[in-house]
Length: 474
Image (cartoon, rainbow, N blue to C red; front, side):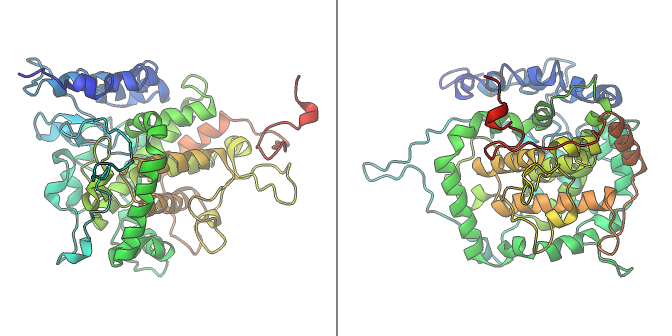
């Protein structure tokens, strides 16, 4: 047993639990159970806090710094090994941990403990003949025959079931979840329509499947499959983000790695007591989003950026599953779109066009805001506080060196198509996917947000919602 310097508690600086201020359990107030509702704790099994065993600080075994310092760490007799039940999207997605994988200690989103948070000094000045980071050394995945892809053995052991043929019963995914939870029921209903949405599914009824629409609308996002120049340009962007942004955003992205829901809660200014069904609507987005993005990841099998450019040195991870599409982007954008399907939320946090009339009311988004020639490019201001937050969460993954920009953009596109199929009016674009439990949760969330007769953003120096100077309090 070694507890000698450098001492992982110091490496996590001062330790990861402390970084998330004072630890992630504090964000969950007192744990994620409090965020959700009618209370996801009551519906999950044994409750969402148990996923955190018993909270996020405990997931870190008993805090991650202590586990890393003790290379011979074993749980106490009768205690279960710490397990983190996310997959990089800020929410639980089921790992099948109780299905017989054994005591596989995990940190963050199913990332092995060996890939712990480690400090890197972001000094990019060259000196004494040495570069600061080996960022010019890159691997072309297309030089391999077949091209380099994520293999089954590369997956975290508890997630390898996603590499098998899709199971519409979600057998392993459900092993550590409460079957009565509305969000879980909604995900199961969604899964039963897998012929309409899963990657690789081909249409037999004229109307394209969701995956066919994804490939058609996102053709430019798939250039990485055969164009080294496209891949290299994305790596260049990640190098710039590493140099310019990473240290400034590190604390925020560290929290968002494990769970992004608290950021939505914070921006909305809500809690589980006053808005329980809004919380459950976010749970539905996480549950459905995690299923669809994991299946798409298994289909595309894209290697992580740091596989091709090790000098990107992600401060932790990367997660042990493929890169494309970004799970954080998919779930964050799906959460946003589900929330903006609530009329009262759309009035406050929707899209404010502000072109002809700068005081125009906010509106809910439509599929045309994400798909088609008139849709804003990924990364452009979509003029919605919630869409801004989804973008910021996705961008954080690029800043960490964990995802390519096209991963993030594809996550937004995939979320928009899933949202449209489940809650929109697909018409000739997509076949609708019936998710009755999701509709029920949405109706109950609607009742929590009364719609104003005439809600407007007030123009004020280009800042949405900021009152004009003449009306400001002095």
